[in-house]
Image (cartoon, rainbow, N blue to C red; front, side, top):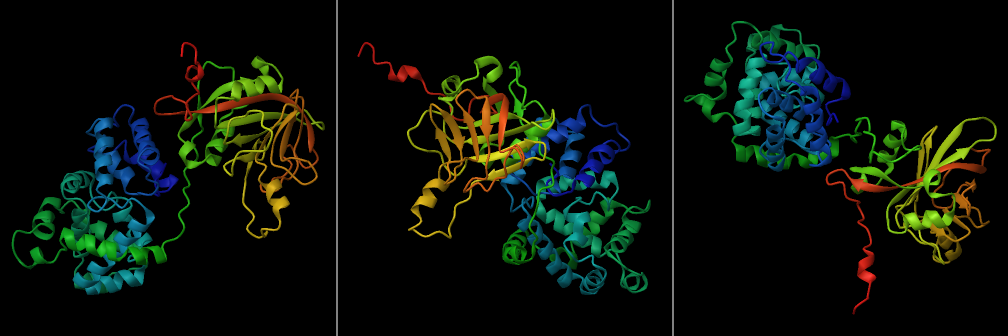
Length: 464
């Protein structure tokens, strides 16, 4: 996961910046995998989708700390969001707006120049709030500042970033041709990356002076927190819709079982995109297969009766060619013979390969209370009979996906509520069925089924 940094920049961090960061020191063994594991844990366990500054911070920390220490430190920092990191797009925009305010108040002439060249925009401030000064300071200086940041938090970021604006003199602001944000930061880098620039002296004189007017110029932590909260509404009004561009990680599966249809990584990558959020951090565990358990609905029901959430994968055999289509359905309740339809709106239909598409159920708010028949048909999520099983329905008796008693024949029609295409293809509403597999979901963390299992001993009344 890139956490908003962009895949291109994340690749640069991992492949280039990491390997030659501190005095040419070689990358720690397994460093790329360690960083990937940490970022995945931050996203999947801590629930952070957007924190673009975090990959650079984690990269530097991994150069000197064990992976477990780095994760524990980041977890504590994320838990104290007001003092350390912006952990969502709203926070990121609010931090940038707060920076605008203090630059305007402390360096009005520089503020005007930054506004004109585009440096005073959210994107223009990427070297600070996305790259953690990585492109503005020497590597050793960034590490030095990281030590300060781990103690002082966001106050240190604002102090240093504001002090950098003050490096350019009034004469330089007038004479240098600032055409865009890059030219502004290049002027700053010409100073901070020069051999004569002493970061320690800059800290002593400009960032943490012991006396003089500068001691009163920088905002205190309480003022910063208040300003950031005040700017949250501006952030909500101005931030774009964030779309996570992280390539989906394929679902894992329990080894040692003869899986067929879920083996391609592309199929498992699509499944993890479509599952409800609470079920994404899971693995697939095969509980039924026509190859091993027999081709009949009775065997299907017997194997699935104790599992609430299941993914059914079906191999639809096309008549026109030797190509096979993998289609299926996600069931929110266990498959048991029922006299009536059941399930809920979590159910969905899908085509996993080729041309992967998912068809979630949607309610119809346009129909009135008098249209009861339409609503009843629309809410036929799961249908389980001795003669067939199906998901989705229509007034003419067809289904979104239906399998016969022997699991040899299937059909798929557009169904009310799901709005699906015929899953096997427009000209393949009826098809022959190849392999059928059913998977339950097992948690990544502890390897236990998300639903647990029914303990039959509860119903054993012998001896009572």
